[in-house]
Length: 153
Image (cartoon, rainbow, N blue to C red; front, side, top):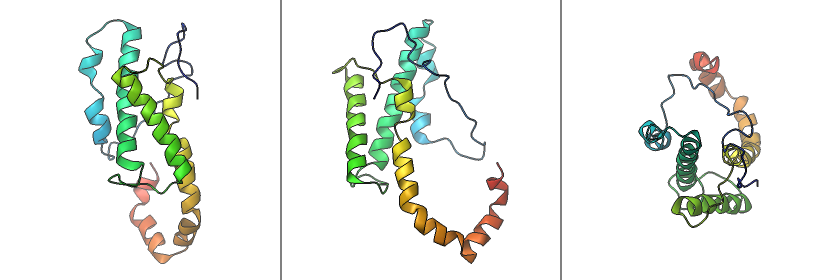
């Protein structure tokens, strides 16, 4: 994992910041809505400080996603291996340490952006057989017909 250090490199700009537009029909996650605070960003004119604030807001989002989905005792646990759970919990603990001031080793934006990639991949592999069987059913065909306009977005 790359850890952001004391360089002249921008926290957010090691690579182009990725953005994508979510269709307006998709509701904004409460985790995003509650953590992204434009008023905090407006308090400073320093770009480096704005980037630090953005990164800390994203830390909060990642921590809350872990608390909601990662682990057997969460509200909505995802089906992943124990090893994967330990890896993500370790990253979450790093984020908590930075937010609390116990560590000054900021994780780079790219590491944060890709924090859940391996989880998604593992979930797809675990679902692959079941989903393949489901795709062959009449129920799936009916679902696709009902949701065709959303599938085209």
